[in-house]
Image (cartoon, rainbow, N blue to C red):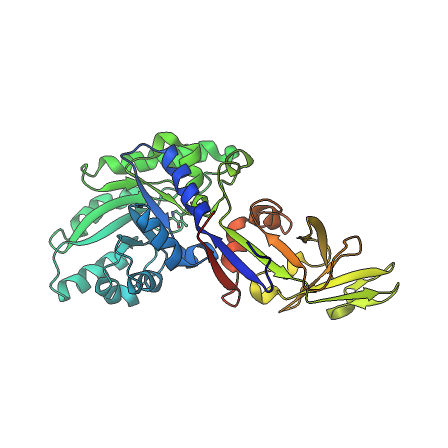
Amino acid sequence: MGKTKETVLEIHLPNLLDNFQVIKSKISSSTKVLAVVKAVAYGSNAVAIAKCLELAGVDYFAVAYVSEGIALRKEGIKTPILVLHPQIENLEKAIRYDLEPSMYSFRILNAFSKVVQQNSIRKYPVHLKFNTGLNRLGFNEMDIKALKKTFNQESLKLVSIFSHLAATEDPSETEFTKTQLAVFARISQHFDAAPLRHVLNTSGILNYPEAHYDMVRTGIGLYGFGNDPQFDKEFKPVLHLKTVISQIHTLNKGESLGYNRAFIATNTTKIATLPIGHADGISRQYGNGNGQVYIKSMPAKIIGNVCMDMLMVDVSTIDCEEGEEVIIIDDKTQTADSLAKQANTISYEILTALSERIQRKLIVKP
Ligand SMILES: *Cc1c(COP(=O)(O)O)cnc(C)c1O
């Protein structure tokens, strides 16, 4: 693979397929896999990721919003798509594009039943979302009776019941997670065997094999992270962010660098300017020595304030030139997870913050 000459986000599809197999190896062959491709497939390219996984035989996709599902349908994705957080405003469109909405409240259930009836549709597929302790979206256990009365079996077909867990990656919250799972198990008993049951995200799949049920929902695992050093080893980060050195400056002792003169050289300092900034998703928190990039396998600290379109790194001890390749994240030098830790955040936030301005490049061969 040639060295990059501008800022580029490589999407390594062979790694994606390997991660998909890792997930499959953790579950029984009768358990379905739902791939979460919301937020542009965690900052990558939803259509490319979905096409690749559709060919690999994934059972379901999930997006957060209707617009994300439409984007996939317009590009020919045929696999069922669950919309996790639809808004009433978009329900007609959901039907037009054959998207399956999650029903998470009486308000949306009533609104959707009405839209389905108005369009004289019978048995439109929907999913029921239950709140078991995340307290974000979903019906509560005590709603079940009223829910069964409200659910119009002529208009709607119940495809699945599901819930979402608050802390599957956190060993200190095992007890809480088990309580959530117990609530979900009780809720499941109120439904016959027909609807699919699913409750686990990636860390749940890895840490709670007893609760795989009929389907599992994986997002971050597909993109290469297990949220735990033990599992991270099995996955391969799919997104690699690279850039180049635009210009090199030498600061003399006492000279300042960048906006607000946030860095003052205490010695002669060699500085490299990179064409990526906070508008691209490298937040200002990484400035002033908090974050680093890699040049010729050597760490270079981000110094001064991160600008909108650029940032500067200290290359005093690195033998490098203008035009040299710079690694911000890949699967060896520094992963999105290790970069995230430098700013007290998580890989999810780094990946999904990468701006549209950064060119995406599909890598199809290992
Ligand atoms: C985003 C999301 C997931 C995926 O979680 P990962 O930790 O990325 O595997 C699963 N389920 C729901 C409801 C989600 O919102």
